[in-house]
Length: 138
Image 1 (cartoon, helix red, strand yellow):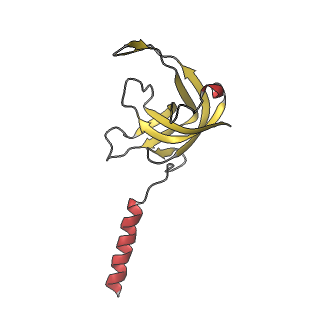
Image 2: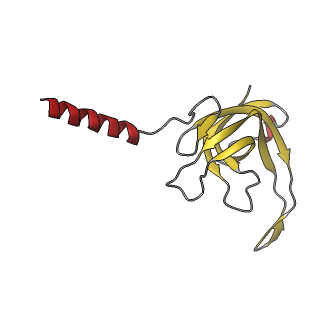
Image 3: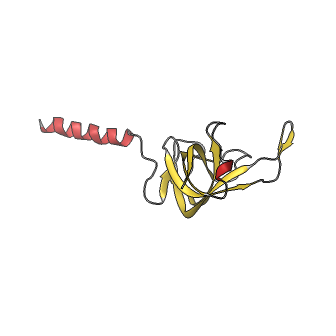
């Protein structure tokens, strides 16, 4: 009976390791996707230099969430891009759907909900970005 209990305890511990982790690890540490993260800050906009592409160049609007306190995003060893990133004070926001409007919130304090991911293209202007599923004024 003791051996069976030990096996059950080991199985439960292993299952806990496999369970999806929450987005927030501590008060300053967060996780990358697929965890859902909620962050607040000031929404700003900037238009960086035009980015060249196959059709010429385009000027894009970049929405930035400026955090009051920098955060740490815990790396994911199983993912090619999602590496540990410290002292994150700005996060570029990407819309999860074209219907999600960010412009009305520029210059306001907001709460953004979404999934964090690490930059991996020329269109990414911060080390950490958020695919936003919801945004609201604070």
